[in-house]
Length: 432
Ligand code: SAJ
Image: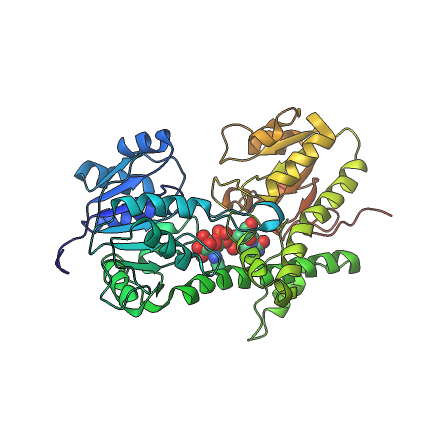
């Protein structure tokens, strides 16, 4: 392949990152094959549709599938560039599980030819790209592998983390800076040439290990900062202060920017990635570990407060606003909102009503409970108690006169105008 020719690309994993990535690469004119283990995902993509919710993604996928630059399959095929975007969950005791990455690398090894580039995008513990390289070397002894040969290697291997924010994926895929870590500088330069085809942000090269750590550090930085906000909210509850007002005032300082408290931290990234650093350096990470624990324990704090409020108002219906882990998306993975609402449903049965415009039915966590999915209007008509768990824009736009007289526990601070006689802040102001 000459450098000005468009490479053929194979993207392994068509999830929240892999599918948008495949579509954006296909838009740049490269022939892309998306590979996934789920037949439903493959069929959906091949029919020009998508199985996830993401702004503008369906139109893009429809276009590139219609043009023939993107197709999906259950099986890998030879390509010039392989991009691995499979999940890296953790197992028992928060030990990172890289088995999906290694499985993908095994499949790639079978399809590799001289001149190919393999790029890992999945969030991974430091050293994973080298492990992947070692596996490929074992499976393909006929190839000269970077870092293990004194000759010019036959293939390039690099790590390039995704950094996109759900809800803004397409824009951020194109415009964010990328950090590209090569097993060798030559590998990094090869991968750089590929990303420059579809990334407008700056692409910076480094080592694979530094790039792996950079990704983990970004999400841990956010987790630690959210933990600070969550701890403040618990302190404010104790001191009967409005945490939102305190944060607003403190943020007027030119060098202070406190994030927002909430019911806990969710999603498959920020609540997971810090454990990869902790696992790699357990004795050097007290701050990162405690931040994780503070954010996880915020769920229990909210549950306790909510239960106290509900117990003081026997018999009334309670509307939980939101199940998604963050605003304006349909993603319920690792969602504190979902965990809290499901626990309340177990405790209070049919008194609990769920308002979630991004769900067409209640998730499995509610099986066996009598909780019911209702719309915003029904909640405002029939539920004297309202608990906000997700800050969807549609909830924010409910005006004060529709909330007047309600008892509100607003864990997200979406209704700052809620009068004092109800629960306008994370803390409760119940009589006694
Ligand atoms: N949250 C708060 N308070 C805040 C901000 C967030 O409670 O002030 C909560 C959210 O409600 C949510 C969780 O934190 O439950 C995570 O949300 P998020 O918007 O901070 O992040 P994600 O998980 O959607 O995406 C993150 C991003 N990383 C950073 O901002 C450093 C994104 O850029 C990454 O690409 C993504 O993780 C990933 O895939 O790793």
